[in-house]
Image 1 (cartoon, rainbow, N blue to C red):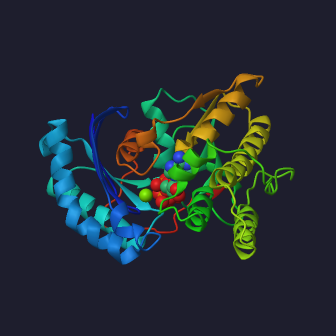
Image 2: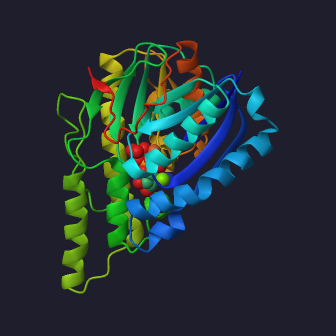
Length: 336
Ligand code: ATP
Ligand code: MG
Ligand code: FE
């Protein structure tokens, strides 16, 4: 079974060919980061224009690298939300055109479901499972009773974890997206600032990162005003320690309330070394045992391979769309 998958929800134009839901024949990712860097974030109009310019080439590259022709495909899959509406529409339109020109089923995929299914390239998933989804726009604990079924059991009340990384990165003059560089600096410093761990002790499974962000920015501004030089490494280490503490704490709470055999960590922030280390350590002593599944680094950020892995589940269920498929920028899983 071969699926041609599209991803264009934000600032990566990506097309992949996926075999049987777990084998990557190709996964081309054209990133636009350099065009957005000078604006300090993703500019929607710039993103749409890049997707239009890139998509045909990226499709050709994906098929060529996979050594696959249109007539060998079984389905076309595409991210239809959440994301930037103009960006999503480019992928949706391209996927529709190919699906109908070649008489193939069209499979609509939720981008966040895709992030979770990046774990499928590591090993088979066992349900029920729990996913910690940490990305540029989302911070969610997701319970999956079965394949392709998602319930939000914890959510951020304000900023997403990746968004907080990018915002404090700005204060440290780190170009967008700042997560990777803050992570690197954090490993060179110590948690000397003891920033607040918001909601760590609350009974629910929700998160909040805006207080931490404000505390960080105030600390840096105050030091600037009095002409004090703070250690960037210690600032990064202190910020990361606060984020990771809360993510680990809430995940452990969730595992108590929802016993599962596997924990999947997904989204761009799943690339964070500090988070990976802390979750590995926390689960090493957990009883009953929980297996940690973290996708390889290149599959944590946005890519079409993860969309193809998720589409394999939807193809079996024959969850198809017709030519009326539209982008849904606010698409979300249901809350439990
Ligand atoms: P969403 O998936 O919620 O729609 P998105 O697609 O923009 O948002 P992703 O591409 O999944 O987000 O992830 C990008 C985010 O991951 C950025 O905020 C980036 O700073 C963050 N990130 C990447 N690497 C790391 C890292 N090592 N540590 C922390 N954050 C990181
Ligand atoms: Mg991106
Ligand atoms: Fe994403």
